[in-house]
Length: 413
Image 1: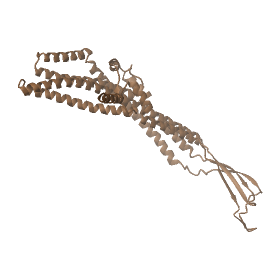
Image 2 (image 1 turned 30 degrees about the vertical axis):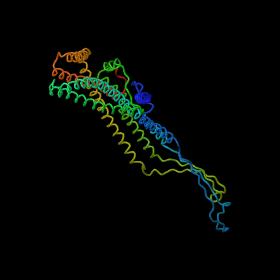
Image 3 (image 1 turned 90 degrees about the vertical axis):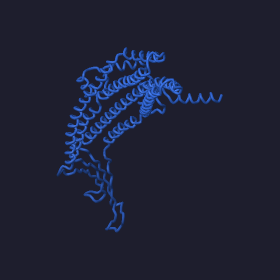
């Protein structure tokens, strides 16, 4: 009874640790739990706080005085006969506050574009890790199946070799295939663990993820093609790529900053009221106070020059980003096209024929109709071909995801 209970606990723990998830399930978990995404959101909130701060005026200043010493009556702190107070408020002129607020709002738009770019990049990483994990598991299943049969065959040959019924050379030939299959299995498991770790980090889930996707869904993904030629994709990328739009928006942002710096050269006005008990022309007089700096020179000339240079710099950077983006679209499209055409040459019937021949070879070898050399040669070819086909399929999906990331709008239908 204890043995069964222990076995139940082990199996239950394994099932809990494994979590079957579709790509959509992973995306939902990613949106809720990804720490990078959640942290980046705070930059937008901080930009909102900057907008609030930009709307706040300087506090009014209140000052006053009392008599410290009355020489006539020889009294200290004669507040009853001599005191005064004044209050002043800084009045912004030249559109300073308006320009500062506009610049702060532009910074928020930049923060939103940065968030959009991060979202697109991380989502592509999620898709990439998901399909990498899927194909590593498919490859592992194939290798494990081959390895199971070859281990049984090697075990039988070792027994026959010990009896002298088969040559040691035949045993070593089988051993080499088993070693290669074990090496493939080790490499696949290593990559599989890495992709599982990436998915866990991206989704914020502690359980390992088991991709849940049907063969039909995979076929549809592999068969999908982008809508439009290279030129159409370039136009879409220029309109939707958040990284490029960030550089375009940065030009407007630097212009707003330059405008703000120019407005800082306009002198501000200090407006206030003053009460004086006895030291003025009249007793208990109330005076209007006006103060303004003398614009003898441009106090913000250097910052204005820097701001104007930043506009020119950002314009050149935007030109570079446009050329770079168009080049990336062209390269990504060509890579996808090459992968698509390469995989298209392998028809479904060819893959079915490969599996049919594989089953036939196993059956004929068991029946003694083919030699060990023919069998091992085929098994090596089969192993390489299966792994290459899965890699080709994965490469096609990865190239499509990369093209999606660059264009950043729906292009596959």
